[in-house]
Image (tube, rainbow, N blue to C red; front, side, top):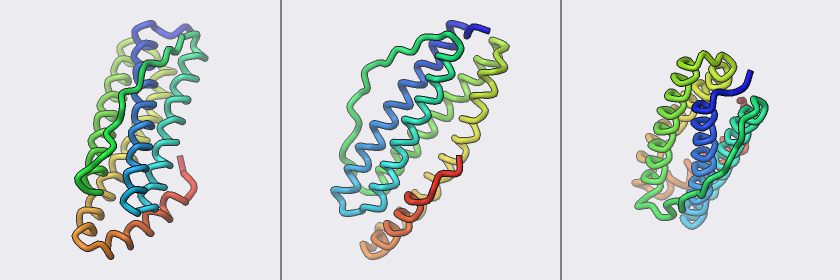
Length: 169
C-alpha cells in the first residue's frame, strides 16, 4: 500500500526535525566539552547519534512505502548556555516538542487508516516516554549538583558510564 501524501510529508518533516535535534545535541556536546564535563559531552554525542538513527528509521519507512524523502536546511543550533542545567532543560523542552509531534503523526496515521505507520510510530511513542524521563531525571540531578563543582564532576562521571552503556532500544 502506497503511503498517503499528507502522511508522507508529515513523516519527512519529522525526519528533518530529528536531524535538527541531532545537530542540537552535537552542539550541546561541544558546550559540555568546553565546560570540562566529558561525561555530559559523551552523553550528548550519543543522543546526537540516536536522533540521526531515528531520522534514518523514519526515512527508511517512507522510502519502503514508495514515498520520497527531501532533506531541508538545518537551522543553526544554540551553542551557549547559562549553565549545564540550562542546556539539559533545553534538551528536555526539545524532547517534549518531539513527543507532541510524534503524537500528531500518530493521530494522522489513525485518520488515514494507515496501520503500518501506526505500528512504526508506536515505537517512537515508547521511545519518547524513555527520553523525557531520562532528561527529567538528569535535569533534577544536575540542578542539585551544579551548586558545587565537585558534585557536578562526580555526576559527570556517572553520566559518562550511562553514555558508555549499550542502548536497549
